Amino acid sequence: QVQLVESGGGLVQPGGSLRLSCAASGSIFRINVMAWYRQAPGKQRELVADITSDDRPNYADSVKGRFTVSRDNAKNTVYLQMNSLKPDDTAVYYCHARSGALTIAWGHGTQVTVSS
Image (tube, rainbow, N blue to C red):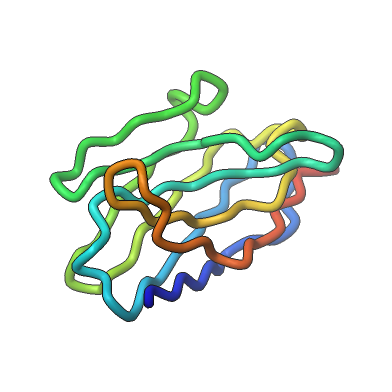
């Protein structure tokens, strides 16, 4: 079993920044890719960014140059630094762990609201 707990969401003005954290616990040795997804009201859940166990990141086109995904293996934590936030970034952000194509766990999500 793997448990994922997100934190760091909140309300921020357009152009602002937030950093999300996802702490993993349990059988974490099974994980080789950690990812962030988001789901806005009325929309499908979409991949925002992911990072492999050897620190190779991948980003959705909509966040390239603004978001940075990183991981601290000593803390079993993955981060999403979000800069230059836009109202379109408003969504519930979910942490995800997988091994290859196999989903291992989802977090419960953290709300990010970008509004003036």
